[in-house]
Image (tube, rainbow, N blue to C red):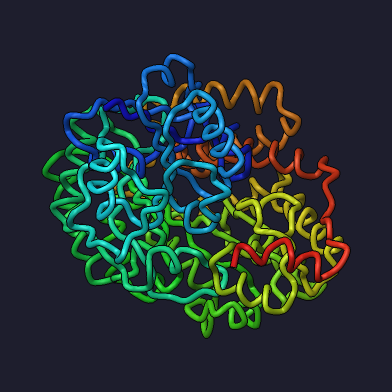
Length: 519
């Protein structure tokens, strides 16, 4: 059996980092870890190919080779995924669709022959057998969430690693919190499940043996969902880095209560974690309470961010506009918080009510759902009726992006961040702070694009001079953030030029009729 695994292309968004990746000669941020894991679960006697359409084209020769096509994707990839399914079916190819998208989009709308709902480890054996025998069912749904111990090593042989800026490892699934807008807890549950330490080290050994020497993204939606196990892993990672003499640097996602645990932050620092993405959401505590984001309340958000930064970890922040509690001052408050927090990479988006979430169900019952959403919260699309005037909300959102990603504001924020994290004289940190050999290409490209031809040349050269003198001990981090700023500058400019306005239905009845099938 020839199995062709296809990963659809992502649309261009703030999250794609498209314009920053080009500085490094990379085509995408991360490989499709889910499909690489599925490939390892397929029968050993099957022939397998993987086409990631974020780094390469899908050719007719690939389709002619295949007996069956397996696709995976997220809600934001829906349009691209359905187009691939239709292309395959027009050629008479059987199609199987899985991944997070199947938990939010009705199976019939994906147009595939077979749809897999849930985690793959407990389903693939039955699916593969039925495909071989020609008796595969239309829908396969996991009866339970499988233990992570049965997840295999992903098949690295299917990708060209040099096309990606980071490699990926998944340690856990699930999150103990109960945020109203989150679909992660709906898909993976609120009881975090983890791989064993030996499994994670085996994946890192595999990456190292394959020649990888750059960053590794631990893709958990909340790495510290089980703090005790996270501590055990971090201690093991620190030992592994010393013994293997490997300077892997780790990136992950966590909850803000990380700042409450000095032991865990120190262990993460020792293990080589240099960046952590936090869902901060809003500086308005009433919004956090209404969204059931209680782990972010009863604390100073600014102090929590500063505490994590003091352990040498860059905080990347996720922020949301459009909560029912938002008033006209929320836009200024959001900008003020982002500036004071010294968070360079602040991902601000409009609230999306994702199908399957508590938020979607509540808004549907209130008659406020417009459509099932696009999965992209960084445009002007609203899929529900907000309490704030929709036009005012979108205009306010655009004003926030314009202010935080102006060159002066962005570089000032980066400098504040560097002042908090630059190692003191004589201090030795476990992560690399200077320029690695591979970063030289990015530096040269940055000087040309931003310093010679960039629209904000004067701001760039001021920042470069400051980074080279005042922050020379973390110059590599400074230049990485300068390159990231180029991406945000372009994306913000494109969004500000967009003429898209929120489109509301003619009536609430129209909205209900259009979305009832998704409940």
